[in-house]
Image (cartoon, rainbow, N blue to C red; front, side, top):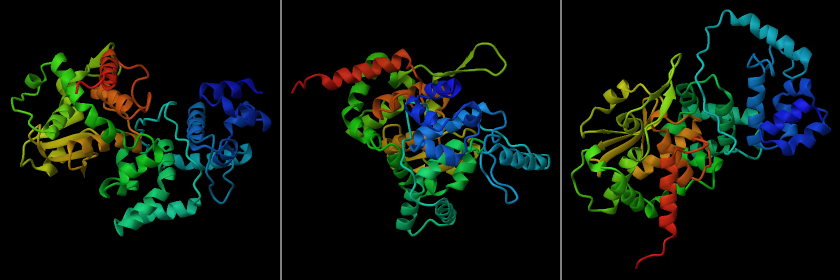
Length: 388
């Protein structure tokens, strides 16, 4: 077995495929020449194959040198002769094209595999459906069916076409945003065991979180709230609002400077949820939005908002309730393959690990102590015998 190939597969957690690569005599040279079709033959599962594809892209300086699509009727294989010919032809046209602005993507880490079966549809059928969906929002049943059938291909492309911005992804797949239920449908297909987690866990959890918050912080003062929480819905809503206060604001490295940049508590709160008064001009609000990552917009009182939306790329998804908007906002990070906002990363790390059970997911490999403390508190509260 070629030591280079064995090392790379082990690093990616793909040791179980080593015998297949050895049987097919894949050495370092042929490893770097693997194309999509060959990888499909070697690795049937989509998730592990995506990991390998991403690794190959990072190993080769030219992001498309390892696999050059066909040009001028020539083959699009990974064989060296064809590959070099196609790359040369493509490079000859680069000078006339404007430079591509690269936007950082957020590939799922190794703890969240997309082990999806192969699509039964031909690539041409998937492409035809994708084009049809760009221009149709009805009939609803047909839209839902085509979105379901193209989900796996869509997830694969979003995670591999790293040059596309979020705005371009939404333009390519507009029905994700403007047809109700499509975000949930995609997430259910990709992560079936986690899809209903929030609605199953939250009703038996939010009161414990509220109790924990009462002991840890002066959340009423921080949120400038002096009202009463008379109903279960009001208690649940307020618990959503105070989540950013339970964890330290995030920090990130400053470009070209020493030391990290620390977010304020206000930064952490507004990157998670922004509250506006009734009567706010939504169009003007969206026009002023600068961030691309999903966040929650609540209109009205903290405990009883009149409207709630997920905002992403200056577009809104109307959700109807704070619990629903929390669910949709979280799922969008995975459907669009985006990083969490650094200002409130610890909040989403908690939601991801405790509520949705997605392991390391897009959060931290090692949670900050406050996340672990709250998870331990809630776990203990759930196992305590009832006092009734």
